[in-house]
Length: 142
Image 1 (cartoon, rainbow, N blue to C red):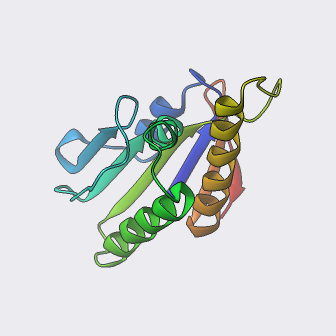
Image 2: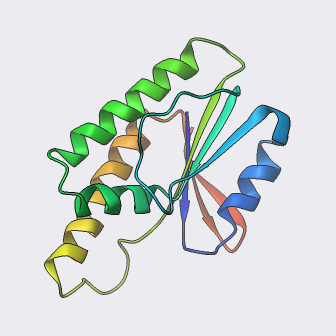
């Protein structure tokens, strides 16, 4: 499992396509920008989940119970799926939202905090982690 983070519009998706040499016929690209992280049954050997921070926001807005535990369970489930076949890869892309000014309103602070905790969980469970700024990647793990 792989996790790529960095600033918004800093080239994370393009870097993932180039680094992993992804082909559409083998890659299921899942956008999490408009909806949460629902049940996912991958149909192709490579799964890219993009917009993780928005899936966290959606879960918080829908008042899901234990958001962090739910995400950790989903991450572990996808990791298990990946480990069943050496051809499989799960690639997570999430924008950094924790740097900068602390939000005034409580819901924005909760989103920032929960996203940070989930990114920590994902980083711990991932084989490799990269930070991408301006299209350039720095390896943080692996």
